[in-house]
Length: 431
Image (tube, rainbow, N blue to C red; front, side, top):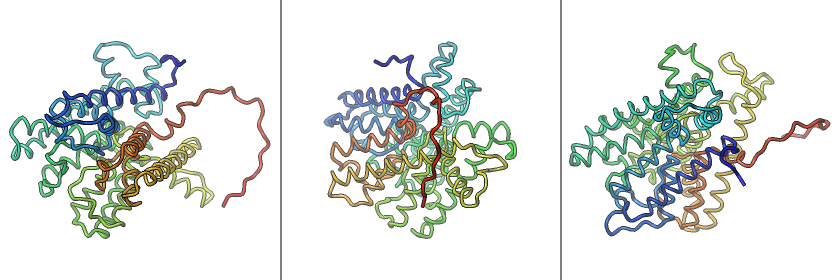
């Protein structure tokens, strides 16, 4: 029998996420959260709860059509909890109650925020809370200026608040009529800039943002922040150029989708009409995703950078370095482990859904699975048409993608005594 105080931090975080999802699903399955005359099955309520908590954006039912004001508030709360992390939300309540943090609570924060040390974890939570409230409030005000022209005051305010929370937390969910995301606002410059800004800030990560604000000089930044800045710029820039070539997009459309594929998964054009080459580009961007400690998903920019540098080091028989710093061996092993686990999850989930759903093409299913694993939310429109078991598989994929493949793999691990001997070494033929 497991006792909560004996659980390892990674196990505790996984259980907390799962608990929030199940509670959210239970509430969203109740009639009091549904529109009059609408009924949401428990599977669809569970899928919606997973998508919200895992800040993904895939939907089994149209939120604007099936959920009333109370249901939408619950979904927004789930998005906020999922984006900041359940441990961060718990820490905020502890701060409000003016209670002290013990070692275990600090370890939970370190695990939940993906920190490398315990130092400054409580202070960081205070910064995160202030930063989130300020950014989301600004995003809501700017969005309200746009939506107030098409909706009554209170409706516009609700849509603006939901859009700001969902976009900052890198969730592609929306409550616009007909679930058309931002298709009808494609030419609106203010909403375009606001959406891109919220997505980028949320996907950049709290620690790098605070470091940039406080230090303000590139040479003073930590290795993590330098890598995140370089990789984010490269991914968005290369993605933009490739989308302009493969889809003949304008610069603004290509930039929007390059950022959206890495972060929030919001659409301004129907991606079902995209070419296969463009869909492949989007899948690569989704797979890599955002930065560690952010509200977004993917294997993370730092993981991809470490893999590239490691391959370069192996090919040139030189140490794995970056910005005059040597990358530790355990970081390299972790990066390749995450990459392999993510690839495996995508392959297995795609195979199972293809076996269950014969009406969809390989590209449609693979795109859906990559989007779920990376918790991005872009879709070719097949989510609502999937069977219950396929939705469950996709839900599990989203959960693994949000919590982290390596965290899931480590749930059942336990501490062993160090071996008193070493086995003899023997080479394995590689390649």
